[in-house]
Image (tube, rainbow, N blue to C red; front, side):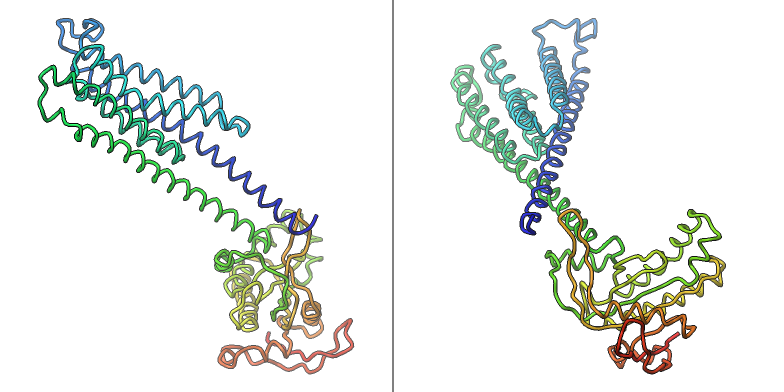
Amino acid sequence: MSSLDSTSSTQDDAADVFQRQMLTETFRSELLRSKILVAIIAGMLVLFLPAAVVSPEGFLSHLPRQHPVAKVCTFLLGIIAFELIAWYGLRRIGDDPTRAGSLGRLRVLIAFFETSLPSMAIFGMGFIEGRPVQALLIPPVLLYFHFVMLTALSLDPRLCVFSGLVAFLEYDLLAQALVPRMAAAGADPTMLGFGQHHGRASLLFFAGLVAAFVAEQIRRQITRSFQVVQERNRVIGLFGQHVSPAIVNKLLQQRADPVSEVRHVCIMFLDIRDFTTFCEKRSPEQVVEYLNRLFSFMIEEVNEHQGVINKFLGDGFMAVFGAPLSDGRDSAHAVDAALAILQRLQRELQAGGLPTTRVGLGLHCGPVVTGNIGSALRKEYTVIGDVVNLASRIESLNKQYDSCLLISQDVWNAVPEDGRPALPEPTVLGEVQVKGRAQPVKVLKLA
């Protein structure tokens, strides 16, 4: 599989994950919207119940069926029943991706029916009951706005516009159809104007547009959040979990895959002395606990000095300064990090937080090739070059010179002049022959 194919496959997988997540969020929003509507209607029903105490018996069930309060309460109970049925239908469909089409059709049906409920109340009052003047003033008319605005929870702007359009058309057509009846019933002339009712209907459509805007903003925020998490996971997947937040944020801002390139970096190798002997006398659990306590502050210091832990080596690690990002002071950062690690280790030992521990560090700098190595299943950001090998050889010289920190002359030369006064005076060990190399290397001892 080519890199282009693997990248395309990865993007397709991410898109599928996002679509499934959006379907899940939509499903949850629909359930939440149904619950909110039930709560609203139930609240309205509770408010109407005191008005039902108008008969001698004082109970709604004893009111005449034609009593207006009884009709309003019956209407509200009908809405609650519908919402419970809709909620049950949503639960049956669930967030199964294979039933996304069914979910979409059910959402349209629910939105149409809900938005039409106030229209049914207006039609019943104005045409069936024969009271056109009161038809446009009954409380259920206010439900238009509730139903339209709550479609924003569907996270579908088109559904919001659809709901607003249905409310606009139904209210406008009903109002205009009732105007002649209202005139015949002697209604106030101010209620007979076409502009008044058309303006109210237009507000319902604009409410749909507002709900669509809110739904789109929520959808975009979810999309951005998913993309940020996906991008952060991609960066951490490439560079490992031990990448400082500052480097992660900078890489997220670049929004580009690191390409293979030649970079000037400083390589740090750290080795724990006598680790084999230490492990021999302790259980695996104790060894892991020891390494976690030891590496925790070491990783912290590397991150603090803009380095990246590239590999763990069992009894040590390799860190890179200058890749994937660099500020031109990579060798200075590496030296500062090495000295900080030794200082933190000394404090931990004095505080009794660790058993007797000695470490050796070796630093070397120079050009390397950086980039991703691996397959579509597993990739790793790594650095390749003679600089890496030589840094490892320099670290191993600590045993020979009974030292803790050795650096090459190249590293010292790369440290800016303004940073040297803060460092300990190096001891020049001269030209040292290292294993596997024909040319000797000039090595300096800092600790």
